Each structure stands twice: as structure tokens, then as C-alpha cells.
Image (cartoon, rainbow, N blue to C red):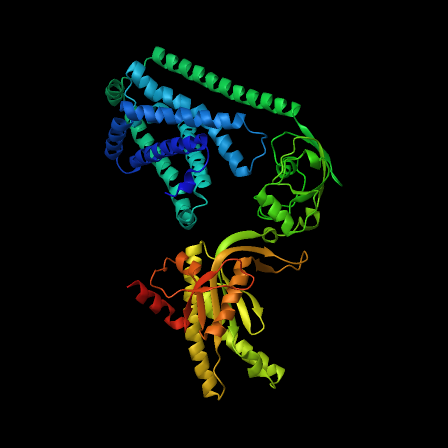
Length: 559
């Protein structure tokens, strides 16, 4: 598994590991209960196996340590929050996490505690008949569902940035629904079966003896233990909220005041960036890159307090110089005010607040294709305008479907050429789609030229540049009239590669970045180095006389 999944401090890693242990146990527990739908014998056999594993001293220590660590770190994280503003999904996960102990404590007391202290045989059939047919069965079923949803949300938060998770997500949703449904069906089936047996006086006595059924005094002791455990949980939760309140009060005593020109004046805690202060106080503040220092749209002019701010980092300084910002301008996502300040937001978001999400921009690593018809001006000189339009439309009718079939789309038409982007799930699939499209375009061009020759016209030649890199996709233009477009150095590099095909007399140049992303890079490939105008670093690319032969040439090089 990629190391990116384990980024963060030790608390984050401990929470992930402990959560995985608990989620694994919950998964097999649900499967175990669900087997009651198929066969009581299978259910008992699986429980015997799980009991042998879970009640092993080592595994018991791991399981209960994971439960304690996971719950303790969750409460500690809640106590250390700067504020309680959270996305709905996080609110749901936290709420479910707080509900779980209220039912789980009773479950643990009636199972492991009752077994260890009073010798109760706490097998699944005993637990089910103990709860059947009162409302306890529905409370425990709800606990199963809450545990499962809480775990699934946590798993999604952890893995959502991986490419394989996004690919498998639709199938995992089905599994996430199936598992608790299977467990609940098993509970209902086994509950009806066991209840029909238990109401028979002749069969009840042997069962109660088999289970070492608790006496009234024992049940009373178990209920008291449950009550004490629940009180302890409420005390811990109160301590958590008390700690949060005290920390917030202490931070406010060390707070700072920020005044926004043409805006409110707020009091906020030290240690936050100015952008975080804006967001925490509901103040609109443009930040297209999300506050990662990848743009300058959050920049502010500091009218008072500039001399009390820490100096800009090299990265922030480069960004400010790129937009010729004045000495009183800083990036809101990079400064952490420690003294009162007055700031002016250079870009006010009010004018665009009703735009679609796409207008804010999205950064992706994708393959793009520049394509141009060779000798178009000379070919169409002296022709009637309608004939020129007719030729171009026929040309695009021949090649654009090949781009669409490969999973791409035309971003814009450029007279006798076009710019296409392959917006797939990840860089690898985007690169492969681009390669597939170039080969298909070449094949389509061959057929198109045969048609032209049959009409007595000269064949068409093209040049293509295929490159892959970081792009920003966003709607550019006035609100209500802003088509989506691509921005970034990758666009310029692809355009320059296409221009180089004319000088080399080839149909296609494929950058090494595309080949590497598609896992087709090889030391034996005849890559050439290109120093392109407007591109800071040299680019290595593979010249291809024809896109039709591209895949064959790549396969031969790897043999």
C-alpha cells in the first residue's frame, strides 16, 4: 500500500490502525451472524473459530487496546479542535462514533464480562434469544448498522485519494449495503428459530442449563455494571467537551482582531492562517487552489500590521513576484497573524458566488492532444468560404469520433486544428486513452484520404502532439457565459510538440510523460530531447511517422 496512506502524525496512524482492527472484527462478526440465514451449524462453527482467535490473550489485548486507543484518540481529537465546524460527512461520522459506546458497553457487559465473571455461555444463539422479542434486538441491530456506517465513512476518508478506491467505489457501495443486510437477515432468521424452541418448556430447561442462564441476581449485577460503564462514558464525554471549552476560552484570551476593509471585524485565535480565519468566521475569501499556495487568488493587501507579520517564504515570494504584487501584499493562506491587522481582499468572491463548482477550477494530471492540419492555408487559398467550411467539417467528422471513442473530448477547435483532453479517472488511463486516440485518428485519416483521392483532391496531412501533465480545468469568462477550458504549462508544451512534428516530418510526437504514465516507457525507445519555446524544462518525446504504427513500435521496443 502506498506510503501516502500513512501520512500524518502518530495519532492519525494509530487511529487508522486501530480502526482497521475494529472494522475487520466487525466485518467477520456480521458475516458470522448472517450465516444464521443459511445454517445454525455454520453460524456456530464460525463463532467457535472466532472465539478461539479473539479470546486468545494476545488477540484480546490487541482488540481491546484498539478499542481503547480508537475511542481515546477520537475524544482527544474532539477536545483539541479549534471549532466544531465540520462537513456533514464528518459530523455524521463523529455523531455515530459517540452513539456506538452507548450500545456497545451493554453488549460487552452481557457477553465477555458475563462470560468471564459469571461463567455465562455467551454464544450467538444465547444473545439472540436474550434480546428476542423485545426492543433490545432492534437496538443491537441499530448498533450493527451504526458501527458499519461509521467504519465505512472512516475507510472512505482514508482511501478516497487512491486511484483503485475510486475505481472500485461503485462495487464497494454494493458490498457496504449487502454486509449489514446479510447480518440482519441472519439475526431475524435465528431469532425466530430460537424463540420457537425456547417457548417450549421441555426444551427451555436444557437450553438454560447449556447457557448457564444468569439468575435474577446475576442479571441485576450485569445491569448495574452497564449503568456504571455508561456513566463513565458520559463523564469522559463531559470531560472532553469541558476540555474543548477551556482550550477555546484560553485561545480567545490570546486572540487577535482582524479588520477586513469593506467587511467585518472579527476576533480569532492565534495560529490560524488568515484564510482559515476568514473561513472560520464565514467571510467570503477567494482561494481557487483551496489554500495550498498554488495560486495567488487569496492575496490581500495588509493596510495595517504588515511590519508585524513573519517574512514570506521563498515559495510565497515567487508567487507574489509572478503577479507583480506590491510590498504590502501577502497570500492569506500563508500568513499567520499574531497581532491586530487590517486587510483588503484583492479578489472579492461575491460577484461569482453563484457560479458552478467548475468555475473554481480543478487540478488534474491528464493527457492532452494538439492536432493541426498541415498546409491548410496553401490548400484553401482561392477556394470559396463555403468549400473551406465543408472540408473542415468533413475532416473533423472523420477524426473527432475517434477521440470520443477513446474517452476524450474536444476542448476547443482552433481553425484547422483542435485541442482534446482525456479526462479519465487517473493519469494512467488518460495516457492510454490518448495513445489509443492517436492510433485511431491515423487510421481514420487513411480512410478519409482515400475518399479525397477518389474525388480528385489532395490527401490531408496532420501533426499531433500528445503530452501529459498537471492541468487546471475551469470555466473561464463572465458569469453565465464562461466555457470550460484548460490552463497550465502542459497545454503550451503539447502545442510546441505538435509544431515540432512539421520540422521533423513526422505525424506524431508522444512525450515521455505519456509513455511513463501508460507504463510503456523503455530504455530502448528512440526518445529525442526537445527544448521548446516557453517551456522551462527540456521534454523527451518519441517521434512517430504515423500514429497507426505507434502501438506496434512500442511493443517491438519492449520485446
